[in-house]
Length: 271
Image (cartoon, rainbow, N blue to C red; front, side):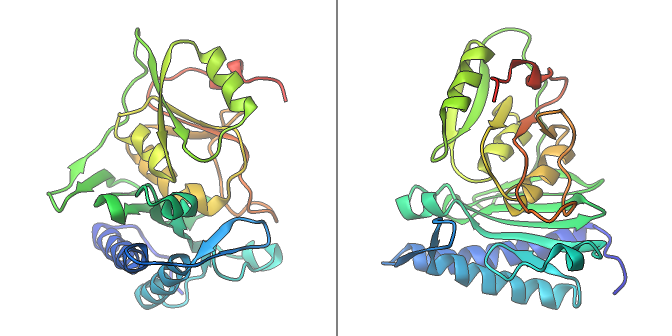
């Protein structure tokens, strides 16, 4: 098929698809639901699969023939994937642990990948009635409680005072604790799912360090939002995260940070 170009109408359509998937998630969230375990021991609920089916149907109708790589679908081998110039990269329910805890901090993540880079991204948190969306050249935007969207911008690193650092509510470790001790004075904002990256994009947090495993569908949509907001999303060598470059779909450790920042790798604890 012909290449897909990010534009406002496409971004609006993907946002609607994410919102529809969020409605499917909330139908499960409001009632009793069962929990199973995947091969990697991560949890899986009926909501994950309901969102998966909704998104695949929506994207297939929107861009027929464009590959869709989703956490809850079959993952083609790299020999097939490396032939993709463009594809949709989806986490139907990012933050299943937060969903199970019923704290609302879970998201629907949909990204368009073009040439190893996320060029369109939508992060929708249905329980919080908040959405973030961005596309290359169109800026980053936030919707809250059905109000008109507002453009968001990552903030410069403060010259004085404590840093505001976003951290995982469900995934912490000794390496992260060591890193935070090296950062110096800071305020830790605990949050689930891709919302941590979005806090940086909207200038609420200065830094989100992820010193543990994630997959490519966890980060792609949020990376587009962060970068269009003027922030950065890099590995620990301070290089931009790229997608579909290898057989594994695991990300390296990474940093998400605002404008005019520092080299965070300098204070990393030794492995």
